[in-house]
Length: 354
Ligand code: NAD
Image (cartoon, rainbow, N blue to C red; front, side):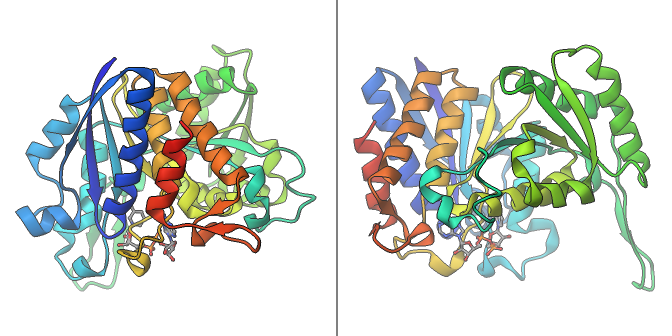
């Protein structure tokens, strides 16, 4: 098949990890007879330096015209003092909103080879942990009105959700649960927040259409605790933007390394935005020690969800697993007795195994 992929390497380690992901995708194209074209664009600090804004209209238009978008990571100390309106992270919010990708998928799986990196006790992770966190991405308090009183001593951020926003996210969750282990947990704060009550009512109403899915409801404070006490109880979790932001980072910590975790952001249709969940890691940039696996695995999600290439996606995931089995580790996941490799070598090792 032919596909046009926009790459947005971003800042600091962004370009390093992106090079490895593109290397692996090119190898997939070669092996399976596809033609992928890659078009690189600027986002975040790199775009601020070149154009004065973190995301240009042209770049957004190019992303919306492509089959899929693969992103590295943005931001860093170089742009800490630019005005809030043009901060690199604004580019992230703008591209998510501009591409209308409202569903953020974050798989949380413990690679058995990295169980030692999981901070939970071995008896807690004896049962397999395979959670799909589905976070709403274009609504909630992150996109509500914000204000500060004239004397600057009081601040307000508005949280808002509509039935339509909850419904479209929940439907993806129900469909996913059907294809997985048939369990869906909806996380909210319905004992306090009106937005959460609307969220819960909407999910309850939809659940009648999915009798094969077992639905549970959990307050976010309890969910944060249950993820640590008994993570194996979860299959698909659906939640709003704010709660999802926090719970998905917690799940990343459970999985062991930030550098390993991919994510996909989907909207209607097949176009999607794919990125590792970590930031631009300014402390390790330019040293060839960043872990490219989160970005490489995001490439696998891109093949699966935007291009419908399941076999090829699985080939990348298998190659990553084999490289870990063979004992290769970037410094962030290194443990004694393993072979330490850099970012470029890690990319080569995965590509060789496709
Ligand atoms: P970070 O994720 O960049 O780094 C946290 C720690 O994890 C650091 O010690 C870093 O070295 C390490 N780390 C992260 N990714 C790694 C990888 N692939 N391999 C090995 N180690 C890795 O978070 P931070 O330090 O809080 O943020 C740095 C910058 O990134 C900030 O400007 C922040 O706003 C931005 N950020 C961007 C995104 C994004 O682009 N989606 C997400 C989070 C943070």
